Structures are given as C-alpha cells and as structure tokens.
Image (cartoon, rainbow, N blue to C red):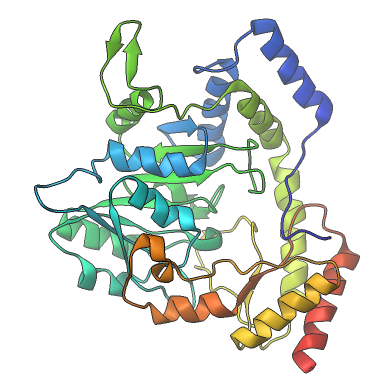
Amino acid sequence: MIPVSKPFFPNREKLKSYIDGIYDRQWLTNNGQLVQELTERLEEYLGVANLLLVSNGTLALQIVYRTLGVNDTAPGAQPEAITTPFSFIATASSLKWEGVQPVFADIDRDTWCLNPTNIEAVITQNTRAIVPVHVFGNACNVEAIDTIAQKHRLKVIYDASHAFGVNYKGESLLTHGDAATLSFHATKLFHTGEGGAIIFKRKEDLERAKKMINFGITGPESIEELGINAKMNELQAAMGLCVLDEMEANLQARKQVWQSYQLAMPENLQLQARHEDLDYNFAYFPVVFESEEQAVRVAATLKENGVLARRYFYPSLESVACLEAQVAQPVSQDIASRILCLPIYADLEPEVQNRVVHLIEVELKA
C-alpha cells in the first residue's frame, strides 16, 4: 500500500555514529550535547532565535499557552482563544486540555488559513489569544492578524507544524507572533521521530519555558514553576541532526514530486492559493474536488488500487463534540468535505505518481 506520507530515513551509518557518542557519554536526556547542538543548528538553518526543543508538537503548544498566560483564569470566566476549525485536532484539543475554550472563526476560501475578517466578531472579554495555523505551510495573513492582536491586546501563537523552513518576504515565517510551534513527528518534512520546537519572540519567555519543560526545576533544591516533563532526549536529537544534514536533498526531491503533481492535475481541481512572497517547503499536496461525493469516491478508488489519500482536515473542528458545540463555519466545512491529500515523500516513484493521476482522471470522467 502506498502511504500518504512516510518518514525520511537518513544515512544509517551517520545515525550510528551519533548513537555511539551517546553510549560513550552515557547521557540520554536533560539537555545533552546533541540537544544543544540541534538547537544551535536549527536556529541557524531556520534563521530564528529563542528556539526551544521539546518532546512533541502538542506539548509545544501547551507549554506556550502556559508561558504566555493564555490559560490564566479570571473569577467566574473561562479563558478563550480564537483559532481555525480547519486543522489537525491537536491545535484545538491542546487549548481545551489547558482549560482554554477554543472559539472558531472561519477560513479563507482560497488560502484555507484563518480569515482575519472573521476574528473580531468573536472576540470577547475572555479572549486571551489568537491561534492561527499556517495550513500546509501556507502563510496566514500575519500583518492583519498582528494588527487585530495589538488593537485588542491579545497574544498570537502560530501553530506552524507544517511550516518548517518556510520563508515569507525574505525571512522565516516562524518569526511572526509571540511564539510559533513546530512538530517534528516522523512524517513531517523535518523530523526527530517524535518531537517539536517553540520559537519565542522574547528571550524572557524562552527562559521561563525552559523551566516549565523540566518540572519547573531550576536547581538541585529549587522548583520555581509548575512544570511538566517535555524535554527532547538525545536519541531524538541524533535523528534530527542526521535528517538536517540531508534536508536540502529531501526538500528538492519533494519539490520535484510536488511540481509533477501540479503539472498533471486536472484543471477542474482546486489547489491552495499561496502568497506570492512565500518560499514553500512542498510538504503536502492537497487538492479540493468539486463535491464531497467525488472526493470520497476518488479516495475509495485509490485505496482499491493500493494508494492511500487522506481527508486532511476532516471533520471541520467546530463539529467535534468533545470541543463543545460551536457555530458552524461554512467555508471550513465545505473545504474539509471536498479535500484529499495525495501521497508525497522524497522517494515517491514517478510511475506511482502517474498511476495516482490516472486513477483520478478516470474517476472524474465516470
């Protein structure tokens, strides 16, 4: 079965050399040498400062909410954060887990990112933050969101799980907002098996978060924060260093796959509209069909022929019961019902791509 995505495995001998070093040093976790090295190299590669490695991308979000005080409660009031309904469940469930009610605002029909024109209507006295998502690595309208946040004195936390290496107007997209989070899950463009990172705007926030990810401990007999264990370990960092060494080859291979799809796609399918000033990372290839029936039929046909496509992101999150009932977001519901992500990874064979496109064409003509 052809998966929709699969992990990039770097050179095995290089990974072994890093693991040999771990054995030599007898140091597995608690800010080891490889975690420190990966932090420095990622800051340089991404063009950012104040980067903190953590054990996964969901904890990255949760640590940010606590660091920036998004989950601070007022008497008799539950804190709220405005976010997008068109995302992976962790964007909203991480808020709920921290006692913050996600409030959904609809997306832009072309970019599929949170539409700034829908934000102010749902701001209340309990709103603490805006949590937009750079969907599939596409940049949100960061300027408009920043203007709204300043006007209403709100924090901005970007879920940038898909935006590794993406530049906007010549600088890292990760520099926008009070913080941005990354996921380094196994199937991401850059990964550490499991893992994640936070990029803070302010160094003082970074320093506070460092305490939080280590139980709040600041010394052998000192605990200054209510913390949790969210540290990245040396084995994760070893994988990340190896993957980073081969990032350009991986990126170029995915770019070629992405562009081949783009050239071959039938014209009546909708592709995501990206900002002109965006340097993309080619992490996903989503397409929107003319109807939900058509999308479901194509997915079934592909599966029957040994190819997995996935309905990223379905269902629209305001309809998920455990997040509490929300006002329907019609654009998100529409896009979510008609979208499929097609297989994309560095070593996807051209003949497999051709088969995927052919099966789609046949099904669209049926």
